[in-house]
Image (tube, rainbow, N blue to C red):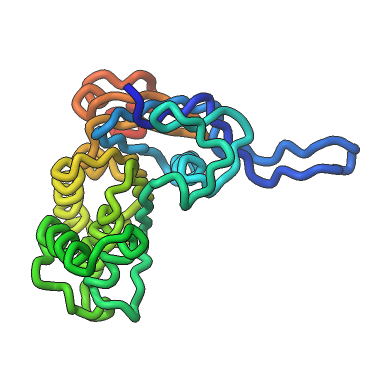
Length: 250
């Protein structure tokens, strides 16, 4: 099947050596032996409360956090030792982290500038993506003049522009108001499906996860409790904790 394969991944923070007892300090375990696969073209949401380990797992996949155990593979390649910039993964965060000194076109084109494309080819790709995210004609707009929702659309277009083999989205809509989040969740889903992008989407919002993902993985205290399609998850939660988090039990 290839795609993304996470095997028994553990992430710890605060690990140190030479503790007062002369041994190693194990630190705090943020991700505790998680295994998960994401098929090519599939969108999987990691859902859970704040501090459950979902963002730490995403960062470990990206190569931004070292693994204390387990492995991350993509298309059967072990990514141990592969730096972030060579994994060919796209990243999108809560704050779009756009470049304020670049207009919309140059923001979206940023990841294309090292791909050997001509200016015409870059402009064609930028225009197609802006059309995809509902911002056709925004190429010359200044970033500070855009609304929060428009900025996140530009950030999504920029993340998709280099055709990443995997897109990692960490709470990309959480800074927006609920009505806008609900609308943009559907738009993010449409853009990912239209481009055939494999993606992992981190959120704490049940409705957002259901709107975006083919499958949802519920996390709590560093562990992956259940992975299922949105309808299956609500119809047959695997545990009381999953049901409680989904609001199915008081």
